[in-house]
Length: 375
Image (cartoon, rainbow, N blue to C red; front, side, top):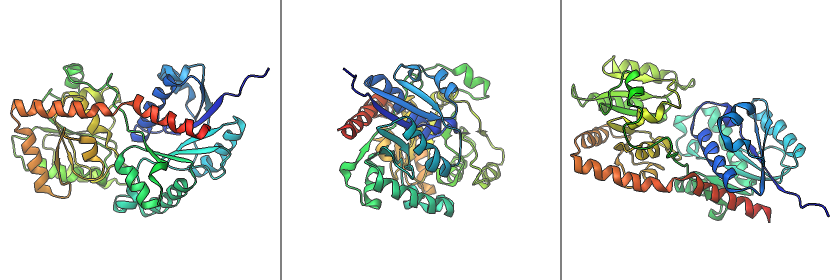
């Protein structure tokens, strides 16, 4: 008697081949958990650097995991050529992609749309990107069997802008890796080697682009005067917005500002853990991963009161209007002047709230969506 065919899930994993950013962290954390939780699914991952992934994380060495090389290519080539071919070649039942779906669909489509900020905040994106994203995301939302996203805010925006029934959209929150982001003194020597003093700097993490609002933060920080702690900026320059880095240098004028464009992923947790205060002044986010990671690290957090950020912060951060310089200055002063009792209470509230951001919980949502597509 022939054995029943095992269910085959294909995953466009090309994010692994790119820079460290939210979507890369999301697919990596989500599928590490999903692989551990489900042995009855054959996972087929498509990416260029198969060996790098295989040797970096043990989950991708499991017997029900196959890593298939898909050469790095332009999105049109990937969506129009590679993914349809690989779907047919590997006899997939479901293909999971990020943001967009293949032009030719030979299996059920599951798509993660992290946000639609280009619809609500187009001023922060190039006109060409906005036009392309509006077309491809709307198409993906219409054609996918089910849609995943990373926050209740993003779910509401997807349903509103694309006329999608809420039942078709599931929330797979970004998770926080508690093995990396936790309170304490670990890594103080690593921080010192970077020229930083534990507990004596204000930290912001995010790509150097207008949406992240670095310039207003620098103005608010400068208004604190000579007593202000050193401002540390961790983030890569966005090649589409080179003026941001120049403007940071101009506004800062060399005063107690340190910029780390290429801080390793291994060092980031220690740099967050030893900050005096973590600030995230972005105008808009679909989630805001650094906020959750800082909260888990036991650092007081100040962040914007817009889009998904209040959802991620819960009651564990001091909020401000990112469009209002005086309100940002107020929030910084409030956070820096917390007495020990208030500081401890804020951190405890953050630690309790961030418990909900767990990769296992999100993987269970993913696997439930897949089970519905298997019927």
